Length: 199
Image (cartoon, rainbow, N blue to C red; front, side, top):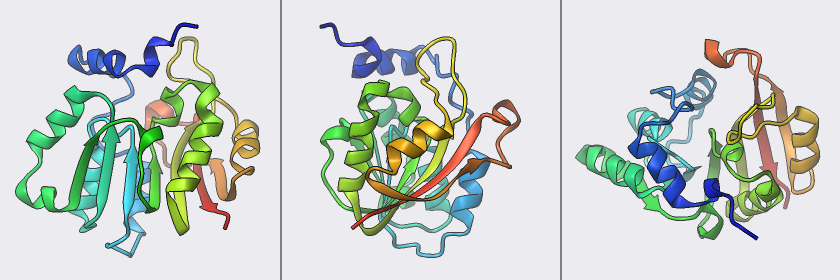
């Protein structure tokens, strides 16, 4: 059985090299920015998988968060981020090149931003299980999911009903609702998810 190309680091690395990154909006998205703005614990341990250009991490560091980890398996982008960080940012942001599904650690908050939609849908159950494993006892998953399908994949879409059935197996859903503050290009096509680990 052949491995789909989008599961390989080489596939994503080539897309970054060619700047074929249509999902990259060039800044932290409004729904996540506003979510981050209401977080008060600046010492919480934050993980951002499939971080790409790490706009979310940079924004969090700017807001004073001190323990941010990003992981991506595309070496081009992880090296680019490392080279671009200021000395102050390096104190707050850890850049890992690797596979999210092989990551070990414990985090208070996992941020979802265009990673879930980039993996093979067959891995979604494994994604939820991995997030649960990585979360601390009172940890949360928060972020954006596409509420639509796409003619070409990746990205892979889905529906709120599908996501609810998937996440409820391992986590307690606190919020899964349409975004009211999406960027114009994604208006009406995003859901905001907050889910807690079930002990």
